[in-house]
Length: 302
Ligand SMILES: Cc1cc2nc3c(=O)[nH]c(=O)nc-3n(C[C@H](O)[C@H](O)[C@H](O)COP(=O)(O)OP(=O)(O)OC[C@H]3O[C@@H](n4cnc5c(N)ncnc54)[C@H](O)[C@@H]3O)c2cc1C
Image (cartoon, rainbow, N blue to C red; front, top):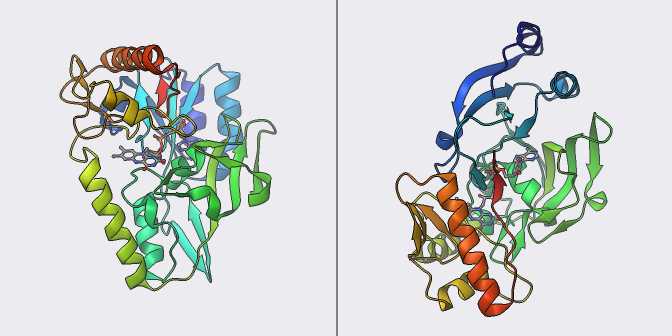
């Protein structure tokens, strides 16, 4: 989608929002799949109520992009614009055991920054790409931990009130890859309370998690992490593996040989290829196990 109305373009400039025309989402997502649209880069949180009002009153649909590591985006010219926060400097401020973190901060860099100040707890998330805002939205987790356990406060733009608000940790529910935020809420910043641990001890945990990832995931290949959520008490990857489906392909979309719940873009896969592969695998698992797999990957189809 292209914003052409000169009045909107002028207002975006007044709000200090950078307009990048015809951005390729294929180049901004870890799967390397996705068409083009205008990208709006937001430099200050406070403009959001006005910006959203401007887009809504002019019928400009929008989606919110973090680091693009959990997304499967449709092909071709996309029928919505994309909003993205610009990372401020500094993006993490520490106060005792509290870390105040901007949503645009890189998750891995935030974890190592805190580790160097003897604050741990998040070792399991090392190696999870993307932003802190994206991790919060999805309640990212791994190896028995999840980011939600450390959240004490979230600053967000609330779609319901059209205002920037602050929620305390106990007002938010964090479940397996699910949170109580509304679909249009935008995470802007978070306060995490992290346990004190020596850097050496944290580093040991980080090395163990890195090794586990290296030995089980196709890290050099384009993916969006796990495609399906694990059904309660079961493993999506194990079922796909037991059905002998590793390596199954549609065009260049392929079930990883390494981890059956990672689907990779082995070349020039299109969103259509990947969606066909996902539908095929879901159907086979449903037929054999009677389990309907739910997407973990977020699909933005045109
Ligand atoms: C190799 C690899 C390994 C992975 N391993 C794991 C893992 O172990 N555990 C795990 O949980 N995930 C894993 N993932 C998936 C992904 O990295 C995480 O879900 C990550 O937290 C997504 O963050 P992001 O910023 O990239 O979000 P995006 O992919 O940009 O967006 C995902 C969703 O969050 C929304 N969103 C993003 N930022 C915001 C914001 N500030 N406010 C509101 N909504 C927002 C988007 O609109 C979208 O709906 C892995 C991915 C890869 C490629």
